[in-house]
Image 1: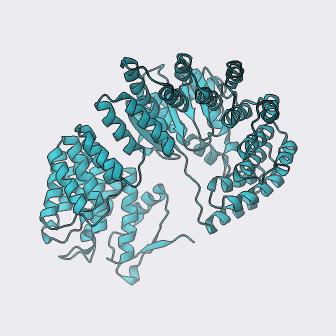
Image 2 (image 1 turned 90 degrees about the vertical axis):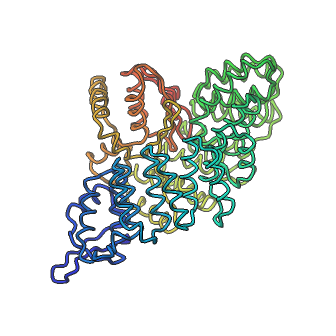
Length: 622
């Protein structure tokens, strides 16, 4: 049962109860604000309810609804001289944040200073005001608030530290930044990743490479922001090869995920340019790193160009290009390259065959893949591992040869792993085999108990078959085990800035005049060539109108529209998504590439899709 919070009036006879669910949708929350009572008690329930409603106003940047709530707070019977509700730090912080995100700095300041002389405001309120200043470009004022907080003996925490460091970096205030760093060292609170990254940025932008390395080396965990700051420090000192080696290490230590892929091409091209200008000839490992970076960024033309220009190539060079061809959907070229590799006297290894089998699977080259698997041991002395068997199961399953795929699973020389059963489950999804899907899913629920993808895939298989009771059983199982489905999210980089969109989000952009104009023109052009929304991809038991609305709110569509609005006509662009692209979005992007004349590269969780002129490099086989 969803937890709920109750708002009630002070007089029992005229009581009006309003329930605010903790997971209330934004639109419903705004409607609730419009109908809520004007006089409220200062109970903990009211404070929590107001906090949820104010959070909705902030996320939707709805100043009108926020001011209505503020008026209700002012009219509260229990306000008196102390203003219990308005003095609550949580509500005060959220009101300040609401006004600041709406650009109303003066109003935020008024809320902040109402009670500041009491000397009882916690750090959260001070930080909310400082961030409000920072958000609106008042950098000096943000630091003044931070200093004022310190003078009143309010101890700063990580939120305050990260805000102050960001202001110092923007102002190039290295002296003040070092003072904040000293406070961090003395603080009893351990600096989190955001604070450490803010320190890296401060020192990197001020050319203090030694300090960058000191901070970086002491960080227990590093993300792509951390590595980017380190790479920037090397680049500023013209240490080209160290920059590229650092980039390679970043990918090798698990940083080759979504954000890294988004920034890889930008960094890679800069480093590549520096290598070309350098008098020192790059060695094979350096060039292999360049080839790998371009392949993982979807720039297969650059990847091949660097590879072809290498005077000396090792096994890693060939494997890297083969993997690039496989993930980018150019497997016919990959098979030809493999033949050249063998003719060159390079002996393939297990990594080579993983790239080949995976590429053949996604390209529909079933017989070619089957033949390569057979030749592994006999022709090249490579013993298949569970990864090769997973690729083989996927290869056969995608081709509709489910029985053969099951035979492979049941007759493997080793116990099937999660990747093998996962390949079989995905094959069942493609072929609509519910009974075998249930068997594969049960194995996966034991081997990979907390992997949400397996549960979601079985649920989708049930939904495709119209078995809604099965869908509900899977959802209940996920709930019992505390497993949540990952939300769809897409990223796009424009002018060196990464923009993030979630499914059903982007309200402000989607309500803008520019969006509506481009969307209307685009849909008219698409309808002329016969596009109709395929609502069968929405695996929920809802009406067709709702399904169509949900499909149009998929994150990759919002990201694509953002690119169309903010880039020049004819310019190519790249989108990265954390989940597999659905069939209708795939068809939609193909037609968008045709009617706009744009080249669009989309990287989903499985592979790269290169859309151009109404076609995709995957040939609709993914």
